[in-house]
Image 1 (spheres, rainbow, N blue to C red):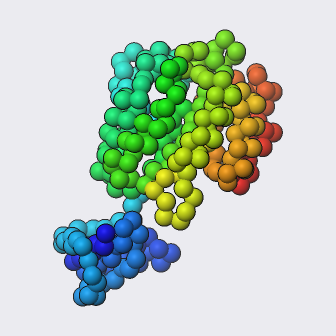
Image 2: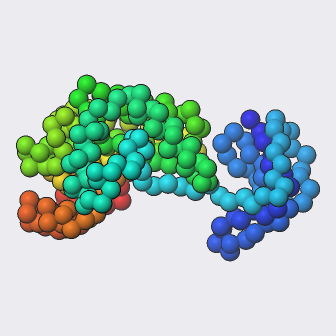
Image 3: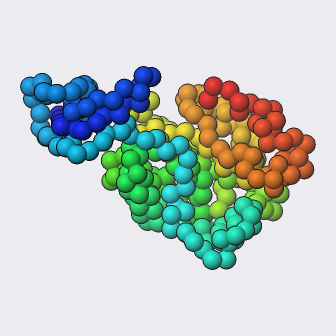
Length: 265
């Protein structure tokens, strides 16, 4: 598909010089911007022409952290004014009922909301895998494809349940072996490292208070094997700092240093 957007009042390039192009045009092939200019549009062979008259064009925004499934759980009165740990403990009991349909619908909903604000590339930290629903990541990829967004999915995880000293209940955690096996599966199936890829995958153990140290180590190993990015929550609240000091004898960032997370991945 070859497309020209023409007669754009102003293109804000956000290049190093913060140049602005008046009466601009943009030539696109498939999902790649090929040329940008001003004035008369060259005689491209095109399939589609869009008028940008009266409009400002910005580069697509990039959203680097989200929880799409939580778009189905907004404004819950019982936890609107609670601390993070209390909020999570309450909502885990709601989230344990999430299934593939809920993930796909919430993915589409959240991405379309982001698109209205100018986001064209997004990630999502999907770390919740209730028992009996191992293919939630696949449902999310399906939802992302419906929207046409450039999607950097993360295969999140929780392995440290409340009975083992973590925060989440058993109903929403998986074993380390289940997590690592499925992480490798989704990387093999969905990760495309090419330059203009529409699908990439990162590994995203949820947080120091919801995964084991072994899983953090093994995630680093897997990330290095496939040259993947790593993603997690870290040092969000005082509760987390106190948890890490109590369990590991280290503050959150020092703990991440110890387990090898502060590297190029």
